Length: 390
Image 1 (cartoon, rainbow, N blue to C red):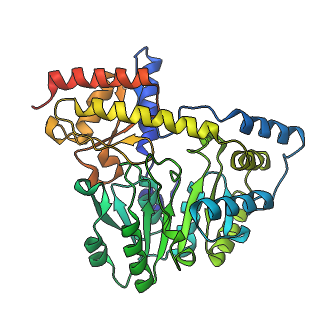
Image 2: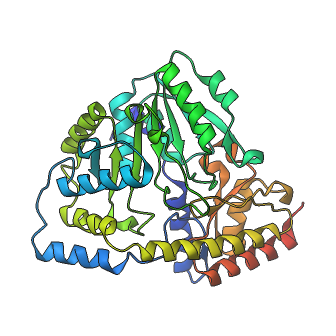
């Protein structure tokens, strides 16, 4: 069968590939500790599951509007307006099955072949994959580990040209856990306005911050009209398998994305949207407890990584990923990740899975039990004591 040439430009996420490899080893009887996949290891809060049960019993099993149920769109607009400071109303919100469709549809609706997209790197690989699929040109913006993985504004300025159409932001950041400072966002906003750019701001970890908050560029004056906010329920409410995301979009873009939803998915499952409404309007104690546990794990896990030979790790400000510098071990990121899987039974992701700028780093998810995190540290420590610093 002949495939379209554009398929050669689309990649798959390394996290799912490594998860499959780890599961295959487990099926052969190996003990494997998974630090690869990026999802909370907590159950969806009980009141959200109960809301889905009620919705099923009440018959919320039919088609809904392509843009999402009106009551959920209104609730999202209200919560993000009040809590994130983003000026928006229901008509700016489009609900989708997961957050990735908003990434895809926004790029599909706005990028022409040859347009340039600025993407901070290392980066969540879907950004570059979709842009390349659409025959746009990806322009990496290297993140500086010495500055908490903040953007180099001078590098941003010198990469903007007449073909630049979009800049992608992700804060809190996957894979580094960094949070962009408000001063950086203000400077970026001025550049965006000056050059008439669109911002695609992935804020899926916006409530997973350990100190202070992660400001949204869409909340700055004049930026809601220039920003497509990507968010969803997967991380904050441990709802990865429910597939419930949304975009907060300028009104003309929202109409285009609704049209793309109509022609692709038709709509997002109605009973799942009812569960999302319960997540927003119900108690938040489970979310707060989860974040307290993630903070405890983060502090202990990063301290453990820093104690390993040849490893240094900055304390992540958000999300649930550690991004240790492993350059002094003597291994490349790919070599170390591969050998830790095969010889130590620990699934990690090489930083190069997030772009060439990730060389010398691993991404480790601490969304796992403390016992498993301690075991992973012990296994990595034994491996490095025997094989490191070649």
